[in-house]
Amino acid sequence: MAISVNLDELEPGSTLAEPVMNSFGQTLIASGAELTPKHISILKTWNIQSVKIKTDSNEIIGKYSDEQLLFAFEKLMQHVKWQPRNRNEEDLLKLGTLFFVEKKQ
Amino acid sequence: MDKRIEYFLNKSRHFPTLPTIYTSLMNVLSNPRSTIQDVTDVISRDQSSASKLLKVANSSLFSIQGKINTISQAVFYLGFNEVKNVLLALSVMDIFSQISNSRSANIVHLWKHSISVGVISKLLSTRLGLKDSEDFFISGILHDIGKLFFLHSFKEEYDNLITEAKDTSRRLIDLEFEKYGTTHDIVGGMLAEKWNLPLSLRNIIKYHNHGSIIGKTDILLSTVHISNIISIMMATDILGDVFVPQPNFKVWSVLKLAPDTLADMNQSIVSTTEDAFAILKI
Image (tube, rainbow over all chains, first blue to last red; front, side, top):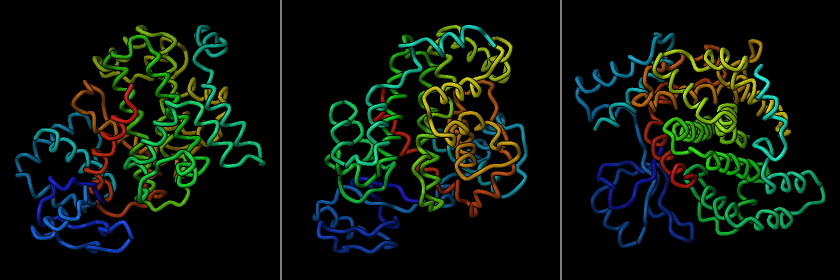
């Protein structure tokens, strides 16, 4: 999945989900490029407002400690009275945990 | 069924009438000779709807490259049907703002819930790469229209019923049945029929909780069913003692989601719903 990020909030190391193009439709930076500080300053000189960045749930999960994640999961499960029956339902609860842990920041 | 429900459903000049812009648009669209210009004219007559349509069309809900500046561009990029659906969604937002106590926490929550189910359904349809994804946003917006009807008709009485469900961890649908002899999904279906909404949308309103119709489900119903559950999970902090329902198992074989599909959508769901709240504010 991709998310739109404003240039002043853009962090080096993020991966472009869509190519950055100029108004003539020419590609300036290709999709999939890992953004360096140099890229970001070039984007600024081109006056680009925002870019699409790839989001990976496992990368977000990596930002939190096991305790934080477990706490969020337990909070979620107070409202969930069922056990996942397949990988899709595990995925659904993972999403719920992410909502919780990101909100509690 | 509570006699008052029939009364409110049939009372003219009451909630069940759709705003004129939507009905005139339906008339124009059902005429095979209508042109893009005719459609544009109808929409442009209502400046407030026209400017909101442009905001929605330019939002992250529709990943359109470049900026849409005019109504005819919006019709061109989104298509007749999606434009009609966005205007219907705007009409539903108007009904929210007509409710006298629209600042009540329960009403604000229903407003947010309706928008987020619309947004999540739309994002999922994009994620699944569906070509025909026009009805997903409006299906989410409309799925709980029966609750909005109850709030509009019974005001505090129904507002208190929602609070009771939260406080006692009982299902709202059971409390509705005890009090009114019917439930929001059934009444919503009746309203949709009065509005002449297509069968697919009426079915979403009636069956979104079950996720299937006589044991069968399709991609639209499955998507709204899961999006409804995701939206409930997003609001766990204000849920009180309300529980997140377990999905109907049948929907997974229809959706065929790759591992981590939902978890990877986390940030895009949060940011796109926030955008939509700002655009559709009441």
